[in-house]
Structure formats: C-alpha cells, structure tokens
Amino acid sequence: MDIIYLHDLKVDCVIGVWEWERKIRQEITIDLDMGFDIRKAAETDDLAHTLSYKDVSKRVSSFVQD
Image (tube, rainbow, N blue to C red):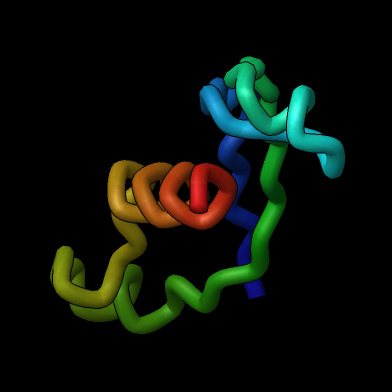
C-alpha cells in the first residue's frame, strides 16, 4: 500500500453548533494522508489505474462543505 499525501487543502465551510456560528464561513486547512494501491498503475503505465489528486480534493471539499 502506498501513501498519497494531500496537504494544505484550504476549504471555506461552516463550523459550529449554534445558529450564530453557522452564519459565517471559515477557512480550514486539511492535511490528508491516505493509503492507495498504485501497483497496477505502475505495472501497466495506465492512467486509468491512478488516483486523481484533483478528484480527491473536490470530493473532500464537497464533503466538508455539506
């Protein structure tokens, strides 16, 4: 298993429990280290078997913002 590093991802989101807290957006910074098996991509040199950092960033951002 390989480790994919996605560091310093900045996302504007709502943080808080109270109503007044939920009226403002705040910037958070995310550092993500995740396991991913890239052996097939390395063996075949096929981009279809790789991981898109852009797609991961979008998915993490979307999750945090919802």
